[in-house]
Length: 342
Figure (tube, rainbow, N blue to C red):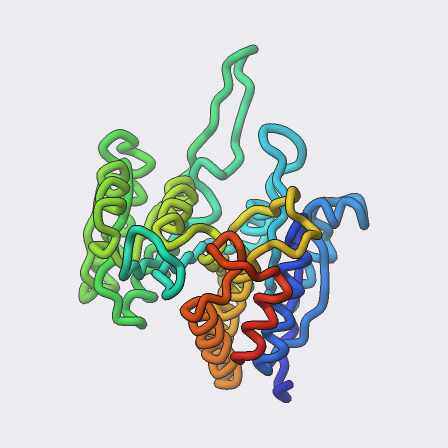
């Protein structure tokens, strides 16, 4: 391992989480990644261990280390505890959800040449969690939009596009109907563009028309910027263009901490069967290493990231894939195939 190791909080998660997390850690070790992992828990695993879905010890570890790699955590539908992911984002102010989506050789889809990055505001909107029962049979949900959060995510998206020479930023919105909330978001994004990033090509698009155009020809888009609820839907939609959630990484980044995670579910039906595809979390670990290079200047992290990315690109192109991608490899066998190429 490299001498300057960065402390890394590892949250294995639920269901297939421990399996894909173990695979990612094996690949990181093989690539000589400059990381010092330490395990903490959240989700069902944390309830079983300490009786809390998101223990203070896990939150404090992420605050102190500033870096985490997280497997999928179960979120009950319509009842039970509140989403661990939402809690982490709000409590740690992880305001930017970043989802790169690109076509991969060896993963056959109806589209080719897809290269998108979705920037999703991560702390408010309809996911602010402000819900009320008014009378029996009537509920309300409040959509929260603030100037601060709107400008913060806009700044992150434009800065990303500028630093990486991306073609343009497209903002999805519904300000034609939600004139006050989406109107504020759109106004503040425009302000950031005009005053701080006028050189970055920029357009706005009503989200329903934007989704139609996405599935007509996704190569017309590059960086997509939107508020929380829209971003949740569009990031999964765009993942479907390149093979699904099993081949798309994700990051949640704030001022003081960053969590890199598998964006797919915990798949309890196949947990423990050595069938899960660990690629999404491995790709997220590449994002993590690149983040270390960009924010802390660690060239060893960059080199490790390039080794891992080259390994999975080669493996997929040569037909070494898990069953969900049309291959025949188990979780461990796919991991071995990557390690041989690192």
